[in-house]
Image 1 (tube, rainbow, N blue to C red):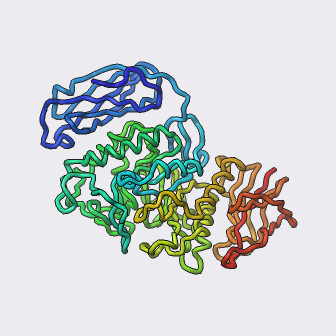
Image 2: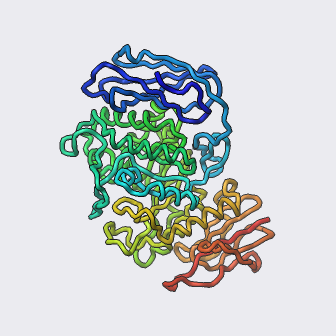
Length: 524
């Protein structure tokens, strides 16, 4: 069986093998898997996947140096798969896989102990855009240079988002199965689609700067995920096993998310329901039992209540991380403030024992485009920036989204203004302050504030970071030596002069006459 004889720790090894036996559906009629045994005797079972031309492949990423061996097995038995072998893994000093570490830093570390701050972008149709000829490599290179390290992407591709979001950039048929949407063959997979994804994932892996949240099923309002009479649990298992077999071994695969806005389960009806919670727990456990590399399994919400500790109380360790969605205010007169986000986060994640990321709060609007998605209309740069700071002051990593690269549009060579503000925020948290030691500290702030204008604080014993979303004045209960104001638009500092523990933000207004936001940095 062709494959590597030597391999470095935490790199992807691939073994291929063929069979002369004919199958009507080689994806569904035979289950092939490899049992890998490491130097310590522990076993890992990795599903194989059919890749055309009577060829099956196994991808595996060993985490321990030393002598390894493998054994193929099949059901029903096929003697062509009676293959075994050995290989040697050399030690490596790389970061390794991303792990959920609730209660440590902001909930995530690499295997080497390095804390992880998520600074992400939502590009659901990244794979579809490359499939249709978009300059995805150039886009990813630019995002990486801006400090982005995580992309939310789907393994299916949409054609439409209500109420009128046609994906007009699509020049190819976006159907990953056999047959069609009107006559689906869920026992077959579109190899042209998957081999295109392979090239994208391999390039991201080689670059080593960006991780992926792999969303296994898209919005539940679209076919086939809204039609569980056709797309049964059996076809879902076949689909997810195939995804795991192809991509679980990659270091750049950080998260498996079963269903985008999982409350759509089972019929595309978007509201909270206990059956969807039971699905999230069941399918998360199944992923963990099937995917041997121990990747983070996450749940992405639509409705924000009831709290997740309550939703998943029957099996609180099934889901590792919440990819949390809330938007804050977004009407014409209050979208600039993005108010309420911190309160919703605090309530929805109260008592949650796992990790979380503030993974969706709006798609910054490009006014040059037709407004296909009305509730994005007032999501401008101000909404992007303030929502991001509201998220990080809850000690959460953040994932944004922008209309040019979000879904219905594909304009990968342009950024809207909010990206620049995310870059300023990222540089501040990773260079100016030790993000991983800072914790929520609402008790530091006192005063009288209008709705949505109360400053938000994170702190450790030596540093306090206080975000003033609409300027103003507050008393801060942190005795520090050095006090400075940080401009979240420019990254520039100016001195801050306290008056008996009270601090007033620099006075200024934006182009619409609204007060500017500022960040107070106190350091002992």
